[in-house]
Length: 122
Image (cartoon, rainbow, N blue to C red; front, side):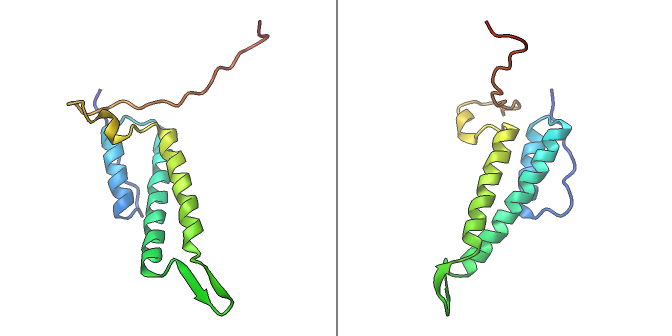
């Protein structure tokens, strides 16, 4: 089954567009997965902007009250956590796992949801 390319959402920057293009071209995505991908792309753009701000300034902010961590530092950490969770929820395989395969991988790993029993357990 060939993956169908979905148009890139408006408002994404370079990093978000690249992620969208790569994932939407490689995988067949359901509507709910496209929503997750949109969020992942937007989050990646936020991470890029925060990293740019952090790179332009010092990690430690010096103010009259004393030294403190740059405000972008805890936010970038939180955004990275969100991004990792979104990518994990999408089930996108890591690139190095399938490095030995000659064919591109077009399947997704699905997260284990656990066992849900209906009724009484024995």
